[in-house]
Length: 338
Ligand SMILES: NC(=O)c1ccc[n+]([C@@H]2O[C@H](COP(=O)([O-])OP(=O)(O)OC[C@H]3O[C@@H](n4cnc5c(N)ncnc54)[C@H](OP(=O)(O)O)[C@@H]3O)[C@@H](O)[C@H]2O)c1
Image (cartoon, rainbow, N blue to C red):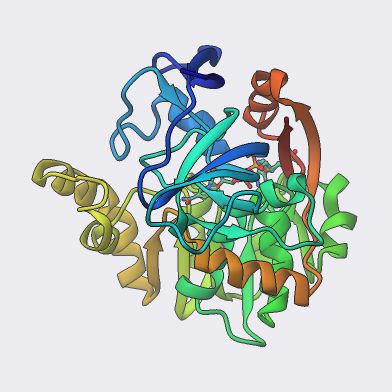
């Protein structure tokens, strides 16, 4: 049986990823086999290895890793009619079936889209997770309208670098936080106001926002409740799943009764704050969708939304790419090239 290389983790904790030789998978009826040309790294790839998400997404070890990919279809399942061998595709793998830090991956066609002709594999691989997350946060959850103000903390990272121009494309006035060395880049991306995140008082001098896209969690999330106008909207990427998330997605994450009760107890602080301040509040985890990737790719091309790639690494150096993202100082996306 032909083999491929896959970077996997053998146990939870800050251990190096292990390079395994595994069988090249065979596509199921609704899947295609993709030869990966480029992948990109997201903090969640490291969080999963560390075990930070095991409450929601427990892994069986050795566990494959990597969500984002771009490549060429090399085989199709028996039911596949919308994709053909040789087509260039990109996507974010679904939470329970990740593994894009490998030579090949099988993926259900509902999670992929064709790569726009103007985009390279590297550019396409940098898009899916951060763009789906930003679109689902700004468009679906915050429901941003032209003229509204939005705060996007952490503007210089993978999320911020696409969320800022996407929010501008939706017509919003964007405030973001970053280190001064990144101010000029974020202004070029369209940010109206850029504040130094090292200055703990900078945000309290600003008028209240219609919406906040919290990318940081922790104390930043707690402080956000006071920064939103009454009846404003707040979505967080880094919080405890709250009651609405549990109701909507508890079955997908196989949450049993005990887990649901525990999560509701721990998230009650945020839910109470939201109620007290009359704020619509949700935690979100990005969902994979090929259809939404098509919408996003069209929006990015029509509105000239750039893809910010900070560094590129060879596939052999996947560990170094992951280490760089783990440092917490990436300035946009980190791409792995085959
Ligand atoms: N729930 C979901 O579905 C979901 C989806 C995507 C991402 N996320 C999470 O969202 C977070 C952001 O993701 P990302 O891809 O943007 O991460 P990232 O690319 O690793 O972010 C790195 C950037 O964050 C900046 N930064 C560090 N500390 C900061 C602070 N206190 N305030 C403002 N900026 C700060 C750094 O700037 P300096 O170098 O100047 O320090 C760096 O440019 C991660 O925790 C990720 O796991 C969640």
